[in-house]
Amino acid sequence: MRGFLLRCVLLWATLPRSNTQSTVVPATALNCCEGDVLILLDSSGSVTNYEFLRLLQFSTSLLRPFSLGSGHVRVGLLQVGTNPNLEFGLDVHNNQESLHKALQSVRQLQGDTNTEAALRVAQGLLKKTDENVPKVLLWLTDGVQPGDVDSAMGELKAQGVSVLAVSTVHGNYQVLQRAVTPPLESHLYSVDIDNIDIITEDMREAIIKIIRAERLRVVDLTSHSAVLQWRPVLNTDSGYYDISYNSLQKTGPETRRTLSGDSSWVELTNLQPDTTYTAALRPESNQRLYNTLSVNFTTLPDVSGPTLVSVSDTGSHQIRVSWGPLQPAQVQRYTVEYGAFPSGEVHTVTLPGQQNSTLLTGLQPGTQYLVTVCALQRNGKERAMSVRACTQDAALPALTDLQLIPVEHQELQVAWHANQEGLKGYWLSWERENSHSHTSKPSISSVYLPASSSSTRLMHLAPSSRVCVSPVYSSGRGEGLCCTEERHTDWQN
Ligand SMILES: *[C@@H]1O[C@H](CO)[C@@H](O)[C@H](O)[C@H]1NC(C)=O
Ligand SMILES: *[C@@H]1O[C@H](CO)[C@@H](O)[C@H](O)[C@H]1NC(C)=O
Image (tube, rainbow, N blue to C red):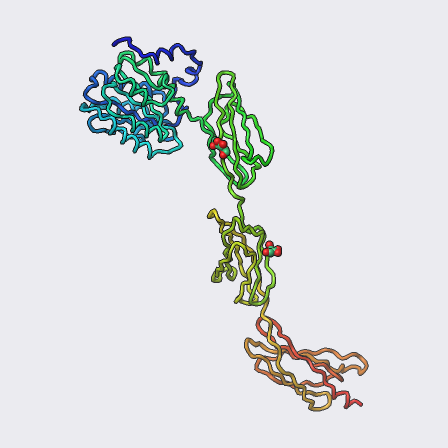
């Protein structure tokens, strides 16, 4: 068998080699890729122990350059025997050392080659993983009687899994050919076990092609900006990136920018809210050709909510609160919270998204209120704005009755009635005859009387004196009544 290579390997060797190997497979860990690689290892009795160990060694060296773990390359090992055996799952090993140890300690199952049963397990495993991450099933087999794998392999491929195979014996080539995903020349290798090392790099290259993280990802999105990130494939000297983007509807001109070769992210700004954009990143290198990466994303709806809250119609028991702008498309409903500032009980009213004002009633007079208008957006976000507003002082009750009863010349008995609630006292004012001169103008006198009083006698009134009585409440002076003593005039005439 030594030296027996199928034409696929030979074909590949004659193809002009790109200079990718030096750039793609550096000595250090390959931070190139993100993907799930599930090794389907034939562990049945037809595989010799020597072959089995060589296949494990091959796996070790094939995978050695990769950075392992979530966000990089995840490796699982599923053995084919009479019953499948998951040696380790995809999220077990996140470093080369532990993967290496695990591969060294795998024990051969022997038994039948029940590949189909193992493929069912593989389907379940790969279905559970992130669908955006490329998946590879690497089938290592001696090619002897693998069983009926066609339908299970077909389902895996329909799931988006790339199937690659290495066969160590000139076995059932037709079955293998049907099993792998194209292109055949880089995804199927039949090789003598002693020469398996010669395919390591080609096989790795084929895997890298599938799992290379050539993805432009949107890592942050607002209503007016997006941050795009990619795994760097260039450096400052080897080229630059060209990024272009536009709304999918092409509502504006395309924007283009050039980014230095060492960049790995870009923030696109001045975007329109709630708009789908398409962006394309082209790595420009004089050393090799890179694919243009593209991504579609939709900016978030504009952050909506009241930007203006105002009060009007302020009364002693009510405040009208208005807000704007109205955004019924974005805002599901408003809640208006209000309470006496700073520590009063908070009340809430809920209003539909089309409403832009409400009258808050049942408030305390002369009190400062904190009013918060909160917009609950359809996307679940909330935005609020607060104002402080004062209710007016209570309209103070008027004096209900005022009587002036003449007693003598220049004397009056004044009697009144007032609402007693909260009453502190009364201010009385009248015009008093100026004692120094009959010609000079009368002077105004005033006196404060306690709440218990309801009448008093005024003396030395000026002719036609106007007498006013105002109730005084704790919150201020109420509306008073005034009367003019007319009879005075009669006496003078
Ligand atoms: C972006 O959307 C357009 C139109 O729906 C589609 O043709 C294109 O394939 C999408 N691109 C990506 C990267 O999804
Ligand atoms: C409230 O909406 C009405 C029409 O629905 C509009 O005329 C008015 O200007 C709006 N008020 C505010 C404060 O936006």
